[in-house]
Image (cartoon, rainbow, N blue to C red; front, side, top):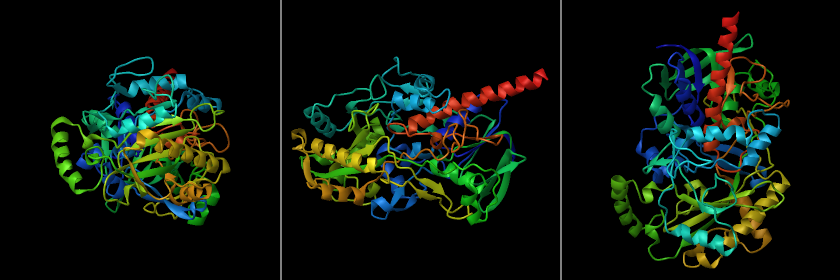
Length: 543
């Protein structure tokens, strides 16, 4: 087996697959892409309506847990992350959201040159292949298919309820404005999940300069004389080492990237020495600045006749209907099995002083309880509400020096008092929407504290049930301050030949779902890498 490549990419997720495609466009460049999980070519990945399978099992899911959360009653949160080619783009709800213009302008204002909205919009468009055509904000012809699918009729009740509360409608959350309610666009093509493995990796898998390794665990980044020179891997209990002639690129996600850096001795000494790891490079920000969108769910049983045809649930008529849905999906790529379940939603304000909407709603055509791990007989719906710009900050640290051990994940949810109050107000607003007349014909029995009347009861329910909506970021943040891990070109501060490229580099979480922004980051990074190495080659030629 070949052991030397120009670039080694650790993690074949939303960023890693994008990078592998773009870097191997140059036939003279060799890339090794390393993934801990298996192939994406499996029915549970390709069929959108079956995403729950990988949410609750661990074949294609890291299935992490957090440390006990002090402000959530000591509960351990659940943190599912994709462990498959395509990463979490192969297991997520496929919602295509970019965030708000102000998010990226803020990144630039923090000292990250080249990351304003005007700078990143061309990369969103470069990636995109939009079924509704190109315009000022959108493009066609890119690898990532973005579609507006046929949605369940039950969404109209939710959207009408928003109308009844004088909330504006919005047909494009990624266009001129984010505010309002409407349907989500999804990363699908003709009813098939369009993960980055499907969109980017399959297009490149025949290239002789790309080598893809699956079910291989990266144990350590090898550093010599201040330069990353390769990676040590574990493959079927055997250890092997790969060498990178140009860069080692870490794209293992907001949990995996800081975990690998710390295992490699890159980080603060007090995070390393308790585990017997010698410090290779002092970088105190590794694993700091973890933040995530915390989420509360209003869940109801449904009462409208025929809801087994409109929602995903468990019932005798629903089982018979699912047989019909199977053939509908197989023949036409439509129906409940093509649904991403979170089909519509809204971006709204709690605090009008904020630069953009500060909460997001996901209306789900199923009862969601404990991330889908607790099932209920019958049919119903759920409305998620999350804080878009939380102030609470946590950490990712080591549990041990064993690479097979999960990292210690502490999102520190609701440790900032502003988050506590805003989530309470957001939950109250969600209750208002759920109690609107448009919801009367479908709204049945509420679950848990969904309709809690008293302040004390609702606050208690938030503590009992709030958790992630799967958007962790920030643990290898980009910036110029002492806690920054990478610079604006995503090079690790103080080391040569090492970059981090994934959601972990976001200095502050964007206002929405994080998959499309992560792909954008990788698209932009690929161009920067090409530019940097072309410049170096020019300098060498001049000498």
